[in-house]
Length: 123
Length: 232
Length: 82
Image (tube, rainbow over all chains, first blue to last red; front, side, top):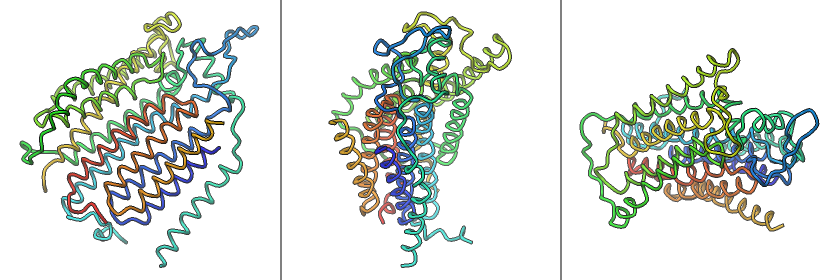
């Protein structure tokens, strides 16, 4: 619950950074803060109260339930949000690097990183 | 003034959109049905102790294939934007003595740790994505320490293309050997003993190739951004 | 109980770092602050029982993203501050 509120606050701060700053690098930093906040929210959705990590080693109780095979008896957290966030973080790095490459190219051609100097795309 | 008002309206609106998520949210006290099925299936059918690995490689395998494609496209975009013709001209400051000696000692160990993480991805926390990232950070250490250190770009490209190709090929092998509806099914190799390195079918094989692919792609991202491409 | 206290502390640090990253004048301070946010987030992931995510976030968020930002800042010398 607290983790989810923290993630939402981070998302809002990141959007504030993206809207209020003029510098393109600062906008990209805001984007990466939104990224971290989203990951916190998704992981918080998968949390189960008092559960351990979903790695089935000796500390996890397993038992035979009649006519349904082996079952995990102790509490583990939901593995699906963890798996989604795992890949999303790596993609987030690649996308951030792509945005930075665009910023570097833009600085080479326009000699400025202020977003107000690039008005030809406005309509 | 009107700008600050608009920003405030946008943030308050976003907060209002996200408010129901918090208001209706209660921390779960037991797993939902789908996750229970994944946890038990990972133990009974796949023989994979780390359930997150089972979800990433098998149950959501197609999803992971798509993510690897996105990673490849982003890397290709960076390489295109920051391309360089001819030799680099800008001077770089050489790394300090501490960094050079430290990197000679640490870089092989970091790369070895990365390989360990992705080959043991089905047993311990970790896997292809984490191991690939650790390998890339080892490459980053070498790039920072030695100014004349260059990756062999042919080697990186071959490692990346071959591992991506083999990943798809293993998926198709499952389709061929186990029949329809089994793309990326790892069970065509033996399940093996619970909690041993050579177990869990093709899961460690697939995750190792993902690790190689992620490691080579992120290394080339770092190399492109460090180099910076031509001045326009 | 101690776990809750640690969690509150980490959340406070990450929110303060986020606000600092928005308000500070120098871009390099903002880059380091965003690295701090990722580091705190990785410890939070460890506390909510997701060790796989914590490993990835620690290496990527605190390590590689910061370095990628610094390399980009190297190429835009002169235009990086507001």
